[in-house]
Amino acid sequence: MSTVLIIFYILAAVTLATAFMTIFSRNPIHSAIYLVICFFSIAGHYLLFNAQFLALVHIIVYSGAIMILLLFTLMLMNLNKEDEVHKPRITRLGAVLSVLITCGILLSIFIQTKPIMGDYDTTGEDYQSIKVLGQVLLDQDNGFMVPFEFVSILLLVAMIGAVLLSKKENSAK
Image 1 (cartoon, rainbow, N blue to C red):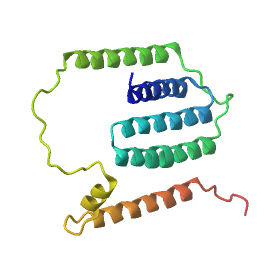
Image 2: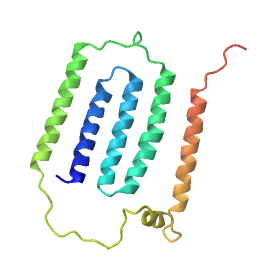
Image 3: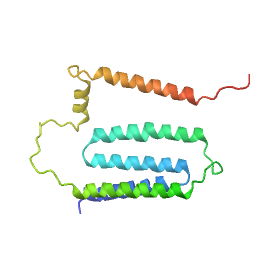
């Protein structure tokens, strides 16, 4: 058995285990930590596919930014066991039924698909390399520098808005 295959099986086991632990954990902070571990193992899969840029972006965006926002949200909400609402059985039955229907549809789609046979056309350029991808995105001729800067300003404004929304008003004057 090759080393890559062993690493794949280990990453797949970690991904599935932490995904299930994310769902079944009672503590929301533990669920968030399991989700971070799941995201890192998915980034390992991207590295096995030789997609370094996608792995790094996945770690930065999902494991970094989104999980930090999720943890801040969980901490601001201050979830307690006493506040937890008990759901009626019909809601649980509906959730199980919708999951089973979705799994059945996805399984039927998976069974009916056929692999694409034919030649794979290549241009000879390696777009998996971070250096080449950076030159393609931020080159003067392509003009992607301005939208890239607009996205950074948009994220900054969203972060400032989230901080202002989470601030508690001073009621004692």
